[in-house]
Amino acid sequence: MVPVWHHFVFESGEVATDGLVSALQRAGLETTPVDPSSESGAGVLFFDASSDRVYEQVRSLSAGGRERVLAICVSCSGLDQHATWSLLEAGASDAFAWTDAPRSAQAIAARYQRWRAVDELVESPVVREKLVGRCPAWKVFVRQVVEAASFTEAPVLVAGESGTGKELAARLI
Image (cartoon, rainbow, N blue to C red; front, side):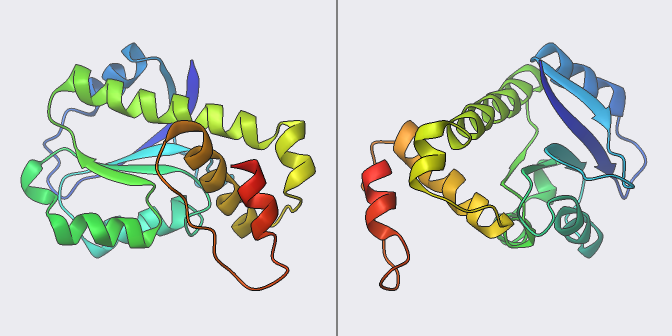
Protein backbone atom coordinates (compact mmCIF):
# COMPACT_ATOMS: atom_id res chain seq x y z
CA MET A 1 0.00 0.00 0.00
CA VAL A 2 1.24 3.46 -0.92
CA PRO A 3 0.57 6.02 1.85
CA VAL A 4 -0.95 9.33 0.72
CA TRP A 5 -3.15 11.96 2.31
CA HIS A 6 -6.45 13.19 0.91
CA HIS A 7 -8.16 16.55 1.18
CA PHE A 8 -11.42 18.02 -0.14
CA VAL A 9 -12.19 21.54 -1.29
CA PHE A 10 -15.84 21.61 -2.34
CA GLU A 11 -17.91 24.67 -3.08
CA SER A 12 -21.15 22.65 -3.16
CA GLY A 13 -21.35 20.29 -0.18
CA GLU A 14 -22.98 17.57 -2.30
CA VAL A 15 -20.07 15.23 -3.06
CA ALA A 16 -19.90 11.77 -1.46
CA THR A 17 -16.34 11.80 -0.13
CA ASP A 18 -16.51 8.27 1.32
CA GLY A 19 -16.81 6.81 -2.17
CA LEU A 20 -13.73 8.69 -3.36
CA VAL A 21 -11.63 7.53 -0.42
CA SER A 22 -12.74 3.91 -0.63
CA ALA A 23 -12.02 3.84 -4.39
CA LEU A 24 -8.46 4.99 -3.66
CA GLN A 25 -8.09 2.33 -0.97
CA ARG A 26 -9.36 -0.40 -3.31
CA ALA A 27 -6.74 0.76 -5.83
CA GLY A 28 -3.96 0.16 -3.31
CA LEU A 29 -3.50 3.56 -1.69
CA GLU A 30 -3.41 3.94 2.08
CA THR A 31 -5.16 7.27 2.54
CA THR A 32 -5.52 9.45 5.60
CA PRO A 33 -6.92 12.97 5.91
CA VAL A 34 -4.29 15.65 5.50
CA ASP A 35 -2.80 16.99 8.70
CA PRO A 36 -2.18 20.70 8.12
CA SER A 37 0.03 20.93 11.21
CA SER A 38 2.67 18.54 9.83
CA GLU A 39 4.71 18.25 6.66
CA SER A 40 2.22 17.11 4.08
CA GLY A 41 4.13 14.73 1.79
CA ALA A 42 2.31 13.21 -1.17
CA GLY A 43 -1.43 13.42 -1.52
CA VAL A 44 -4.64 13.90 -3.46
CA LEU A 45 -6.66 17.11 -3.42
CA PHE A 46 -10.23 16.65 -4.61
CA PHE A 47 -12.22 19.70 -5.70
CA ASP A 48 -15.44 20.44 -7.57
CA ALA A 49 -14.70 23.85 -9.08
CA SER A 50 -11.46 25.66 -9.79
CA SER A 51 -11.03 28.72 -7.61
CA ASP A 52 -8.38 30.78 -5.87
CA ARG A 53 -9.07 28.72 -2.75
CA VAL A 54 -8.16 25.51 -4.61
CA TYR A 55 -4.99 27.05 -6.06
CA GLU A 56 -3.93 28.28 -2.62
CA GLN A 57 -4.50 24.81 -1.13
CA VAL A 58 -2.38 23.25 -3.90
CA ARG A 59 0.37 25.82 -3.30
CA SER A 60 0.36 25.14 0.41
CA LEU A 61 0.07 21.34 0.32
CA SER A 62 2.65 20.93 -2.45
CA ALA A 63 5.11 23.21 -0.61
CA GLY A 64 5.49 25.25 -3.76
CA GLY A 65 5.79 22.18 -6.02
CA ARG A 66 8.26 20.21 -3.89
CA GLU A 67 5.69 17.62 -2.74
CA ARG A 68 3.64 15.55 -5.15
CA VAL A 69 0.01 16.61 -5.13
CA LEU A 70 -2.58 15.36 -7.58
CA ALA A 71 -5.44 17.82 -8.11
CA ILE A 72 -8.53 15.81 -9.01
CA CYS A 73 -11.72 17.53 -10.15
CA VAL A 74 -14.86 15.54 -9.36
CA SER A 75 -16.82 17.68 -11.83
CA CYS A 76 -15.69 17.55 -15.46
CA SER A 77 -17.05 21.09 -15.96
CA GLY A 78 -14.73 22.35 -13.21
CA LEU A 79 -11.53 21.48 -15.06
CA ASP A 80 -10.90 23.35 -18.26
CA GLN A 81 -7.53 24.01 -19.90
CA HIS A 82 -7.01 27.28 -18.00
CA ALA A 83 -7.75 25.60 -14.66
CA THR A 84 -5.37 22.74 -15.44
CA TRP A 85 -2.50 25.12 -16.19
CA SER A 86 -3.29 27.20 -13.10
CA LEU A 87 -3.17 24.08 -10.92
CA LEU A 88 0.18 23.06 -12.41
CA GLU A 89 1.55 26.57 -11.90
CA ALA A 90 0.37 26.41 -8.26
CA GLY A 91 2.47 23.27 -7.74
CA ALA A 92 0.22 20.32 -8.61
CA SER A 93 2.14 17.38 -10.05
CA ASP A 94 -0.83 16.60 -12.28
CA ALA A 95 -4.49 17.50 -12.63
CA PHE A 96 -7.34 15.59 -14.18
CA ALA A 97 -11.05 14.88 -13.88
CA TRP A 98 -12.43 11.99 -11.84
CA THR A 99 -14.65 10.20 -14.34
CA ASP A 100 -15.03 6.53 -13.50
CA ALA A 101 -14.18 5.54 -9.91
CA PRO A 102 -12.17 2.36 -10.57
CA ARG A 103 -10.32 3.77 -13.59
CA SER A 104 -9.56 7.13 -11.97
CA ALA A 105 -8.44 5.52 -8.71
CA GLN A 106 -6.16 3.13 -10.63
CA ALA A 107 -4.64 6.07 -12.53
CA ILE A 108 -3.91 7.84 -9.26
CA ALA A 109 -2.43 4.69 -7.70
CA ALA A 110 -0.26 4.10 -10.79
CA ARG A 111 1.15 7.62 -10.58
CA TYR A 112 2.08 7.23 -6.92
CA GLN A 113 3.59 3.78 -7.49
CA ARG A 114 5.70 5.21 -10.31
CA TRP A 115 6.76 8.16 -8.19
CA ARG A 116 7.64 5.79 -5.35
CA ALA A 117 9.90 3.88 -7.76
CA VAL A 118 11.46 7.19 -8.86
CA ASP A 119 12.11 8.15 -5.23
CA GLU A 120 13.78 4.78 -4.57
CA LEU A 121 16.04 5.34 -7.57
CA VAL A 122 16.82 8.90 -6.45
CA GLU A 123 17.98 7.54 -3.09
CA SER A 124 20.02 4.73 -4.67
CA PRO A 125 23.83 4.88 -4.40
CA VAL A 126 24.34 5.21 -8.17
CA VAL A 127 22.25 8.41 -8.28
CA ARG A 128 23.44 9.85 -4.97
CA GLU A 129 27.08 9.40 -6.01
CA LYS A 130 26.57 11.09 -9.40
CA LEU A 131 24.28 13.99 -8.45
CA VAL A 132 25.04 15.43 -5.04
CA GLY A 133 22.76 17.90 -3.32
CA ARG A 134 19.97 18.11 -0.78
CA CYS A 135 18.11 21.40 -1.30
CA PRO A 136 14.41 20.99 -2.25
CA ALA A 137 14.77 22.49 -5.74
CA TRP A 138 17.69 20.15 -6.48
CA LYS A 139 15.68 17.13 -5.31
CA VAL A 140 12.82 18.10 -7.65
CA PHE A 141 15.31 18.35 -10.53
CA VAL A 142 16.90 14.99 -9.74
CA ARG A 143 13.44 13.37 -9.59
CA GLN A 144 12.70 14.73 -13.06
CA VAL A 145 16.00 13.45 -14.44
CA VAL A 146 15.50 9.99 -12.94
CA GLU A 147 11.91 9.78 -14.15
CA ALA A 148 12.87 10.79 -17.69
CA ALA A 149 15.74 8.31 -17.72
CA SER A 150 13.79 5.42 -16.25
CA PHE A 151 10.29 5.72 -17.64
CA THR A 152 10.55 7.32 -21.08
CA GLU A 153 12.40 6.86 -24.30
CA ALA A 154 12.04 10.52 -25.17
CA PRO A 155 15.11 12.54 -26.01
CA VAL A 156 16.32 14.78 -23.20
CA LEU A 157 18.03 18.14 -23.66
CA VAL A 158 20.31 19.05 -20.77
CA ALA A 159 21.14 22.75 -20.78
CA GLY A 160 22.66 25.14 -18.26
CA GLU A 161 25.58 27.24 -17.21
CA SER A 162 29.12 25.91 -17.34
CA GLY A 163 29.98 23.85 -14.27
CA THR A 164 26.41 23.03 -13.23
CA GLY A 165 26.69 19.27 -13.75
CA LYS A 166 25.15 18.83 -17.19
CA GLU A 167 27.62 16.10 -18.09
CA LEU A 168 26.94 14.24 -14.84
CA ALA A 169 23.19 14.41 -15.46
CA ALA A 170 23.68 13.22 -19.05
CA ARG A 171 25.79 10.26 -17.89
CA LEU A 172 23.14 9.32 -15.36
CA ILE A 173 20.43 9.43 -18.01
